[in-house]
Image 1 (cartoon, helix red, strand yellow):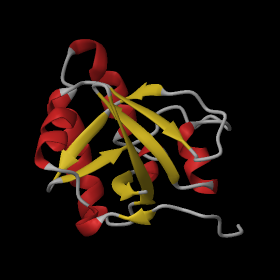
Image 2 (image 1 turned 60 degrees about the vertical axis):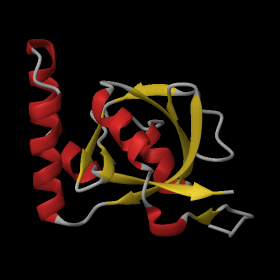
Image 3 (image 1 turned 135 degrees about the horizontal axis):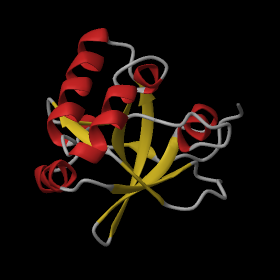
Image 4 (image 1 turned 120 degrees about the vertical axis):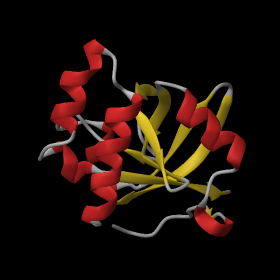
Amino acid sequence: MKAKNRPSTGSGHRFPDDILANIQKEKIIGIRAGVDSTHRIIGIWAVVVEGRVFVRSWSLKPRSWWRTFLEDPHGIIVIGEKEIPIRAIKTRSERLKDLVSAAYKEKYNMPGSVHYVEDMSRDPSRDTTTELVPIQE
């Protein structure tokens, strides 16, 4: 892929504490994958592990947010009224994937969510574990 004018990464690649607290508290956050994408903002589940934000794809559809990030790792998340530019980074660490699975099980423990969390803790969803990091424009 050709390099475009992209925002630079933020200092420390970490979200401020107030944003992390909101992500941890809220059951659903908004996300749009791709800078030049026609994707709309959709709601997804996110967890905070070791002060970092992680998401997983449940459906793996061909035009999903996760597949869009494979082509263009830039996008935005929406927390309350605030849009935050982000970069998506595929997680390779099995240790982090285990921690993300545990965080999903703890946060999304309602009866209607348990089935989805179980699916998301197994392959192929587990392999979509993605860290979201803030970027500065």
